[in-house]
Image 1 (cartoon, protein in one colour):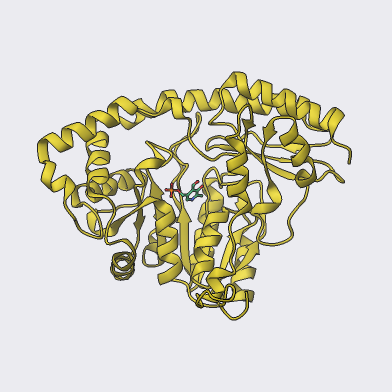
Image 2 (cartoon, protein in one colour; image 1 turned 180 degrees about the vertical axis):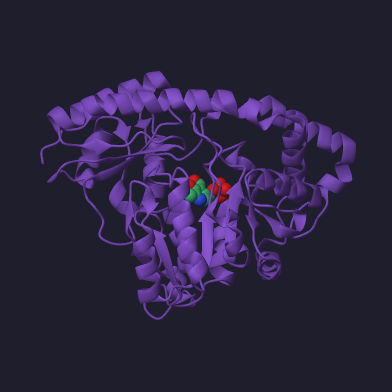
Length: 403
Ligand SMILES: Cc1ncc(COP(=O)(O)O)c(C=O)c1O
């Protein structure tokens, strides 16, 4: 492709956007669904744990009670009652919020895309964890952003490194997933969060805090978002979603932020999609108001924890000697590192031939990818299938894969 021309006979398109290309992770997710494959690749919640009957009831009752309203266009910023419900939910998490502080988005991915358009622009620098969530990079890259990695350790971003990176790169924003991070499963403890907030409070920079996983916690206390620090109120954009709590197919997410920027985000959303589906918002609200979230989540958390334990306990047996991996306190992912000179990308084709798939960690880096890393999701596969998948991984690294 040259100067926005795809090939002769096709009129020009936005050259930068057309050159971004698709995600190799999407291709792996396609392989995940092939017959007989055991997938540790997908970031999807477990099908069998969805509250299908409860959601069906909510749709039916919403349609029965207010059919025409549910089927009509509605506001770009979202249904006021749902925004108020989310406001109460966030207030309980430590960020005092009302409906006015929130706009609904079609999943938090749309929120990331909107932020990419509104907050970022050509050449704007975003500091990120390294590795980080690839689809956020994609969303921000559409707005022309560039990325710089902040050093991270087993507790997330290192505050001194964040300060140094802000001074060095003059970023427009810092993007972080401090709770059960995707892809590493790492969670930033309270004290570290305070230190990061201290740094952010000193600089003229946006905090983009992405928090899809914090409700999927296993026997740990809830974590207060970094954005709950009152010093950051005017410069933080906090994203949440029902995708991991209720169902990703609903496409209900939100952004909590300062009013001025919510107004611009809303106008931008209007130009892209007018609104998020009215009936989906009303059904989600109905479900939320007629169910005890904790009661609904507890069995899901218990099952995910069983799956995490099965995977983590099995990895010691499956991965080559000298490998390391964590036992995340929640979320969906285990992060593993094979010793040198193993390469998770090379091993993947053997793994796929043996009927098991994971995502090589190198896809998630903004700089200096580490070839021996891999992300393994433990949520969408049953305990029995995880055990079988672990045996297949064992065969890959013991017999089938030659370094
Ligand atoms: C860190 C992170 N942010 C955002 C999203 C997007 O979620 P949603 O389904 O709300 O668009 C995901 C989905 O996996 C994610 O892992």
